[in-house]
Structures are given as structure tokens and as C-alpha cells.
Amino acid sequence: MQATLAEFELPLVRPLLTAHGSITVRRGIEVRVGDDACVGRGEAAPLPGFGVETYDEALAALERWADGPEGEPPAEPCAAAAVESALTQLDAEIEGVTLATLLAGEAPTQRRIAVHALVPDLDPEAAAQRAARAAAAGHLAVKLKVAAREPNGGADASVDGQAARIAAVRRALPAGVALRLDANGGWDRSTAVKVLRRVGHLDIEFVEEPTPQAADWAQISRTVGLPVAADEHLRDPASLDRLVEVGAIEVAVLKPAVLGGPHATYDLARRAAMRGVRAVVSSFICGPAGLRIARETAVAVDPHGVHGIGTATLFAEALPEDVVPAGGYLAAPTEASSVAG
Ligand SMILES: [Mg+2]
Image: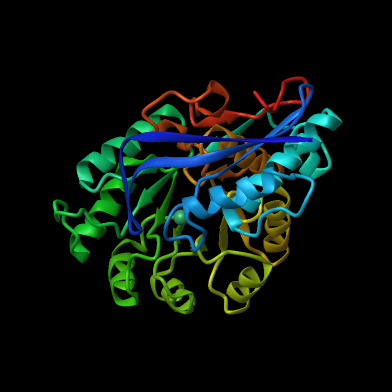
């Protein structure tokens, strides 16, 4: 088996503001394994704020591994996920099935998978307009980044300002389109409660990582009447179990790129489902290889759900058509078409 690495850089159309900071470019390493007949691809593209290795650490780990790819995979989370993703996709190619079929043990009946639209705009009017456009385009859900601050304080970061922005986006969406909030742990408990109390009566599907301390979440959820979702806090089965035991979460946002790849993510989603927690599969603002892995995992985990895998449109350059959402959906490859694209 041959393993090759290719570094890539994908600039975003404009900076993506999150509570972890501003993302302007995604740098990653694509891993390819296989031969002329069958190829599997994965990617490692670490981001700060998720407790993963740095880019240089991922690259060094992958270079060591690629010297003898039959050996132990890297221990670093993003590098490990890249290797596992590439090897699993290669298995699927060799078996002649899609990765989703390999994971779920049966071919999905869905030909497409719904994706939410990401709305990062800080200005309430701009955010509302973008949300309305996403709904008009066919998206069944919108995810609004909250608790982020503009470096020069342009937008109104007060409790009133933040609540007004969320309300403006909800008002811009038709009743059938879900609104998800993602704070990336950017609020303290008091701010989270103050902001969310003002919008708790609106139709909001869930709020992701409201504060950095998961110990706050059960109380926040009860106080404001909104379900909480975990993302950064989910690292492995043990962290899922701890969150479930304390009643902190109703939704698990699962990123194959940081959770060890498609098999580990699929298993974690099943574990969550057995505990009454719904899984939403998400990209890590991935390049094409990572998006394909996330898409296939999403199809296997919940073909009827709305997942966070429509991020190709955040990039300045056009990504391959199969990973770019159209009308709020990504096409799900079937056995007849190639997963590798
Ligand atoms: Mg998140």
C-alpha cells in the first residue's frame, strides 16, 4: 500500500468569526492511500479551540506514518482521523460500496442529505438577510454563530444586542426552518442565561456549547427552556457518557475529523442514540476529502437529519461539485457512482 501526503490551503471568502477567533484560511494535509485501482482519502486540518494538535504536529505525525503506512496510525487526533478516514474509504472502494454503506451495513435509501446553512454575520440585518436567502434556497435549518465578538467592536455585543440579532434571524425564517445557535463556549453562565432567556420563547432547535463549562449546561437548559448540544466537549465515549449522566445535552455534534474518523464517529452516534441523544454530523470546515468523509458518515448516522456539512460555500474557490450544497442538500453517492469523486 502506498501513502502520499499533499498539503493544501483554502482561503475563505471572508473571515469566519467564532468565539474561538477568526478563521481566514484552512490549511490541511490530504492523505491518500491505495494503488492505481483503489484510492482512499482523508485529511487533517487542525483548528485552535478544539483541543487538537497544531498543524505542524499533524504534518510531522503524518510524515512519520507515511514512511511505513502498514504501521501504527498517529496518536494526534486530526492526523489519526485522517489516516483512519483514508483507510476506511479505501476499504469501501475495494469492496465496491460507498463509505456510508460500509459503515451502516446497508445501502442508504436516501439519494441526498440535508445540510444547514451557516450564518456568521454579526450585523442583525445582514444575518437575517442571509438566513432568509438560505431558507429560500431550500435549507431546512440555519446555524447562527453567537457569542463571537468583532475585534474592533463593530456590532452590538450587549445582551440586548445579541438577543435582538437572534430574534431578527428567527423572524426572517419560515416556521418550518429550524434555527440552531452555536456559541463555541463564548459566553459565561450569566450572559448565556441573560441572552437565551430573551429568545427562549422563540422556536430554537438547540444551542451548542453555550459556555466553556459543561457543568453549567443542565441548569442553563432548564432555566431558558432550550436543548443544549455538545461539540468541542465531545472527544470520546467517556466524555459523551459524562455529559449524558449529568443531563447536560440532548444533541451531540460529531466531527469525524477530530473524533478518529468515520467508524469512531458512527459508533459514538450509536452510543448517543442509545442514551436518547441525537447526533448531528459536522465538517471541521473541511476541504473536499474531509467533506466527503463527513457526508458519508452523516448518511450512515442519520439520513433524514440536517447536518453541518454544507461548508464548501465558505471557500473562495469552487470545490468539486459533489461536496457543494445545492438547494440545501448534498447529493449522496450511490454504489453506482464513485465516492472518491
Ligand atoms: Mg460547534
